[in-house]
Image (cartoon, rainbow, N blue to C red):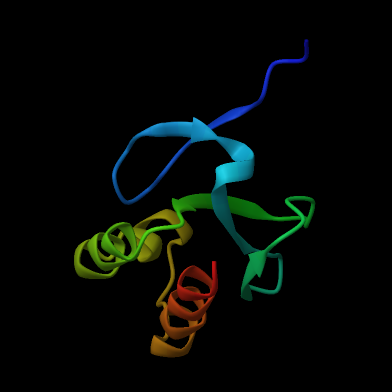
Length: 86
């Protein structure tokens, strides 16, 4: 049986299976996007599919620290939409 890769949520710092988390990617053009496939090029960060984790990330500005850039409200809203859809 193949072992599932583990990643850490940037909101709650819990290790979970990669398939249970949402990947956020910053590419070379400094664009932030959601990566549903998990295969896009760039620096990635993972977050639980939980609104509480997202609120923690927004409040602590964790994404801004990880990607070393300003994160717009539009990106947070697209994340919120992706979390609420699941």
